[in-house]
Structures are given as structure tokens and as C-alpha cells.
Amino acid sequence: MGARTAQAFQSVRAYTLNQIEDRFGPWLPADLFPKAAKKANSRDRIYTGPLTFWSMLWQSFNPQATGRLVVRQIQALFLLQGGPQVSEEDGAYCRAKDRLPVREFPKILHASAAAADQLAAARTLLQGRPIKVVDGSTLTTPDTPKNRKAYPPVQCPEPNFPMLRMVVLFSLLSGAVLNVVTGTLRAAELPMLYQMFDQLIAGDILLGDRNFGNFVLLALLQHFKPEVDFLGRSVRQIKGGHRCKRLGKNDWLMIWKRGKKPSLWLPVPLWAALPKQLTVRIVRGSCYVKGFRVRRVTVVTTLLDAQAYPAEQILQAYLRRWRLELCLDDLKTTLEMEMLRARTPAMLFKEIYTRLIAHNLVRCTMAQAVASQPDVPLERISFKGTLDALRPFTQAMSQARTKKKRSQLWAALLKTLVADLLPERPGRREPRAVKRLKSKYPHLNAPRRLFVDRPKKSKRRRPTISRIEHWLM
Image (cartoon, rainbow, N blue to C red; front, side, top):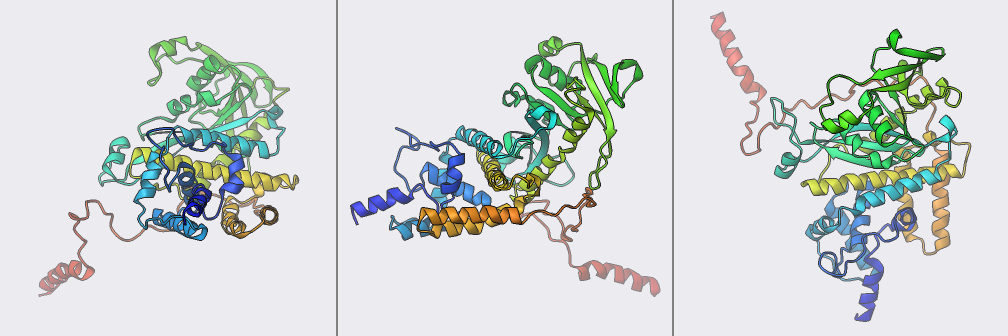
């Protein structure tokens, strides 16, 4: 086919079969994985950097999709457009994912989070200041030698899968992920948050649970980020002798003093540079809402002005922290991020970031749908419903012949999301319990070639029957 083949190859090697990049591309950096001048990523390949990234992103939108299915998608695309023949094996796709530079993924994550915040409607809570929520969670990785070395499994009687801990920084405005830090299960959440201090800018409010409401974090914020305030749960006892001023009912200014023993993870010079005491505000109130686990809380904050930041708004802001738990559930359940697939730590890093970017792009779609209906709150848009709607609508848009028809399909998608709102369930409870029973089968606690199957029930009963017959005789 000569020049015709080369032209077709150039037109399809940066696109996926569903062409999701047409809608999500404007929310991401323009120069995604540019071609290098020499060495790595400098050759003309079928699996170029943009094509590989968009294929990984499509795979994140379809968590059950395998690498083989991605290759079949690319085969169908090239056959449709008259491109060159693509091998049926998925080895080239796996090597292309491994070639993608790791440094580009955080940039894409930050761009998608910024787009989601820009599309979301501004709020007036706490003077309209940006609120960033922090929390930690754990993920399970495949049991490979490299993963086991990087993330040692928990010590227990039976062999376990390697697990990693991640600390995520969310935007309370849109629910998008701003940054993530990973580590082993031995790593504490507070030092991992310290690695994300560069994401906190002047005017931010950091919101956290009881793991973060301590003297060390507040002192570090005052030392490095004096224009960033904190709001979170406190587990300290409220002693009357430490109260220095009463601002209202269950609202005081208190003095927190530095402990005698230095922090285990802070260097000694940094610990010595921290202030010896802090003035904090303690707000105690009832956050009784049916369906929430916490009813009466004690909140510590550095928002000392009671006129600008009323106690009711402080409690409301902390109550909205539950949205972070729902975002984590969307990641681990809907996007099936709880059990990762990558077999090396480097690919685990890329897989985590790709899932987070997919999460942010779904949040962008939800925020864009709400922008057309300002009276609809963003919390009423279903994340699972948005993801389920994106799959068929992107397939339909890839078959549309005109740009006008694709725009009409996207407008219909946004209208569908606004019409299909989550019901308000004020009496719904979310207890921390498992409804589905575990499997009756024993755990595979040894390599397959060394595993001994459990004896059948008839063989287990035979010695017991023999003993009973002997006793009767």
C-alpha cells in the first residue's frame, strides 16, 4: 500500500479503539509522553507512548480487562484503519508499559485533579478556602519475589500476600486525588504525609482523622507551612488547666505543650527546632447523622478566629470527611484497586497512578454534568453510574462520523448522569462488617507443587467410625 499504509499508521498509532482521548485529552497535559530524540522511546513503534498510556487508561476504566484484550483492541483498530499487522502476543504491550517514564505520571495526576477542581462549583464553607483531606489505606500486590522484597508481607502464622500502604491527598471540592505516597506496612502515615508537604499551598486547610490530630503535625505545619491550617480529630484529654480562653459553648483555646520524648521518625535537630508549645482551638460537638459511625467528636484546629470560622462550620467540615472514605471505596471497589496486578514495584507505581488518573477523569465528568445543573449537588452523582455510562457512550462516540454527533452524544451522557441521581438515604447505616461469608476452602499456604490437599470428608470420617465400632464391641 506504500504511502497509504504509512499515512494510516500515523493516524491510528496515537488513538485507542474507543477514542477516549478525544474527551479526556483536554483535561490532561498536551505533550503526553513525547517521542525522544535518541535512545529510549525514540523509535517508530506500534505501541507508542501516547497509545500505550491511553490503552492503560482504558484498561483502568475496565478493571477486568486483560493485556490480551488491549492487544485485541489495537488489532481491531489497525485493521479498521488499514494499518500494519499487529502481533497477537501481549509481550510488546507489556514492554511498552515498562518503557513509559515514571516521572510523567505525577504530572498527569496533578493536571487531572486541577481540571476536576476547576469544573466543580465553588463552596462557601470556612471562608471558601481550599480543603484537602488526607487518609491512608492498604493495597494487596501479587506474590512475586520483587514485590515481596519491596513490600514484605505481614508476619502471621500463614504466608500472606505482599501489601503496601498508601497515603492519599484528596480535594474536598471535587473528590479528585491530588497526590499519593506509597510505602511498606511498617511505614507510618504521618511521615508519609510529611513527604507531600509541597502539595500544601498558602490558604489551604488540611483535614484529617485522629491519626493526624497531634502536636507533631501541627508544629511541622507551623514551622514549614505557617499559612496552612489544620482541622482534625483529637484524642487528647481536654484538661481544664490547659484552657486559656472560652470562645463559646464547647469551644476553647488551649495550650498544647511539646512532649518530653522526641518523635521516633523526626531527626533530632528538626525536633529541637519545633516550638515548645502551640495555641490550638478545641471544638466539641455532636455530629449526629444517621449512618455515620461518629456521633460526638472533639476536633482540634488552628483556625483560632471564632467569628470568621464558627464552630458549626468546623464540625460540618469534619463531617464531610466521610466523602474521602467514599472516594477510597470507589477506588478499591469500583475500580478494583484493592488487589493490584503488576509483578514489579515499578509497574505497581504506574498501575496505581493510572487508576488514580482514571478516578480523577471520572470526577471531571461528574463535575461537568453538575455544571449544567447548578442545583444538583455533586455528591448525588454516582461514581459507579458515571463509569458504567462512560463505557457505552464512548463506544458510540467512536462510531459517530461527525464532530457534531459526538458532541450530542456527550451532552446526552451528561444529561443522563444528572437524571440518574443517588437517592437520599438519611437512615442508612454503614457498619464496618462483612456481609458475604468467606470461602469454605482452605488457604493456599504453600507453593502449588508442595501444597497437600485436605483429605476428603469420607476419609476424615473413617477413623472416627472405626473408633466408635471398636468402643461398641
